[in-house]
Length: 552
Image 1: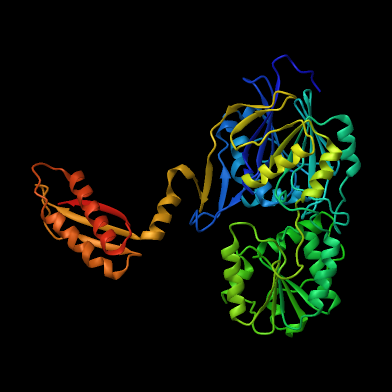
Image 2: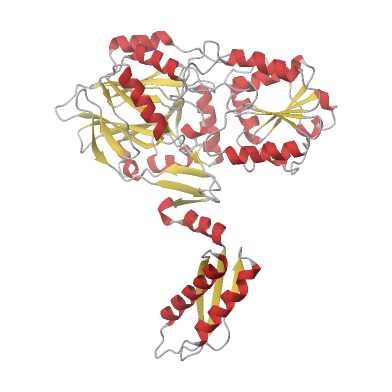
């Protein structure tokens, strides 16, 4: 590793995942301010929400700052395979075109995404063994095994000539994770003995006391619950939580049930886990179409849709729109996942639809069906005791989570605490932690096949139309600029009772138009305002209104 020059700096730049849960994208820069070399840790998505971003399924960060310096971007290093950590790679890698590093299971998931995007042959993915090290430029990055809710989660020891950063990724301290490696506590202790300049750490559960709980304890609870049910059972869980899938499948086998996977990502993660050497004792699966012919007490469905996602399997089952799977009276649905903030209404809608069909619901609100994959306060305290960082940098959480994390770090006598914001370049140096620059930060919406800057306002206009509807007005004018016929109005999402007063106002406005010259813009604006005023008076809302003039 090189020795630092006098003007070298080590900086941290989050472009997603600070002040929010999702879209994790973190960059570390090393070198002089005008010529830093960068590594990117994780490259994730945020999921859209119909209430706030209608029509948008995925959101990714704008990485313009790094793309303009891509010759200095040395690598993307993935901590684990959750969508909010690797889901943006197919969309953003073409702007960076740098090597990708990941442990074997994560590499398989990334390669599948690149293959789907037609990038498999172009984007190099290097598989790093568990506990392995990646050396690029002045960075040496050691993978340290930890536990989470997916195979092969890793903390990263990012070593540079100016100090070592512990980037925890997503984690918890599970003494019995059932699948995969346990937390390498000795490695974290050794890192603390070596000296940790800064710890960039998960804040998700910092408001919750105690510990997050073990998959092994949950396994006993789920097996007991499943054993007491008589009809068809649908279990909704994150398909990436391979240990949870294994638990449910083993419970099904114990009680003589066959397992059918329902949902594309269930098949994807199960196949990747088997390919990476996990799920060795997984029961033989049955096709969902064949499962429909079995007696109710002989089948268990493992479904996507724990968050009420619009196109997920359980959502379609609840709406009676699934091709092969039906649930009804005497059947049960187990939601083995936490409710991610913002998904509440969608989840409750699915549960209500199932309940209306006679399906019994088991969820985190009433039963022990889930343990979190993120550290609660006791686990955070233990990690701080191991690592003993000079600087605490809370990330991966909403602002309230990060503020609580910062307060905890101060109570543990961490010398310096810095709460970053997306787009801030934070210099990491003892006694000199500060924001040294701010770069352009924006969200990019994946709108169908098109990437759209959030600042274009497409979703804002969609929300406006969703609230107030749309009015389209066409005016035909002659060569002298005068209207030659009554305007034509088209209404979408506007109540019938509003149509007549709007038409009357528009007709009056157009008839009163007596141009001295070709002032079409004035006519368009006067007509638009007349329509919106009339709608507001009759309805209390102002629809999106567009006026078109056709000259003959």
